[in-house]
Image (cartoon, rainbow, N blue to C red; front, side, top):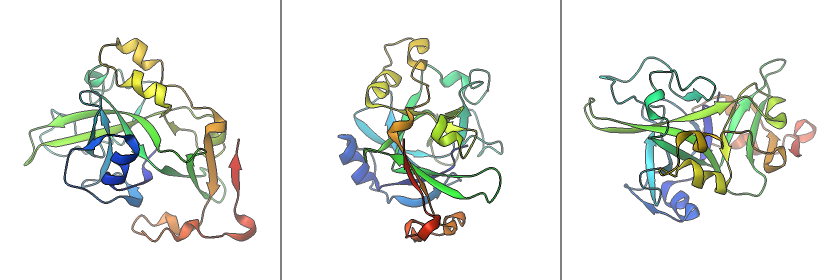
Length: 226
């Protein structure tokens, strides 16, 4: 599951992606979790030259209220049969641009880790978007696609977000390509592309925005580059 992320403000994200912003500037978040009212930034396949402010998690177009079922992540293995996602495949693709994401060990001490790009670039996650007009106000929203992990993430968790290279982003957002060809990019990224950092447990509290978990942890801190 990918449900806790770190991302820059919309102005900085648009600048780094080389696109224009589509909305009133919004702040970033060092410890964001998917919940009603959460917005993250990315690009949609219909107009990839413009930064979009996506509500996260996804609000399907046919919902008359915010869904009670989980739409934070779409599993790549079965999203083609899920009502919330299947009609979006090949039609409404997006990428979500973040600095990195947090994950916790599933066993033992459940230590927290932060994953980011080894080259310092934005992390570009494959996603799906939808547009709902049945609520009080229209909602543009997204979900993050996940899959089985590569080695570096698999040491911590049994799922990972699909992280795309720049070349793969062009394919994923290309509306002229058939879905089967676009879906070929939903592969685990190379281990060497990621940086894995053990962080402090103060990140466990979603309301903590101090980023003090990045401070020196002494001998318990590990930073791995594969």
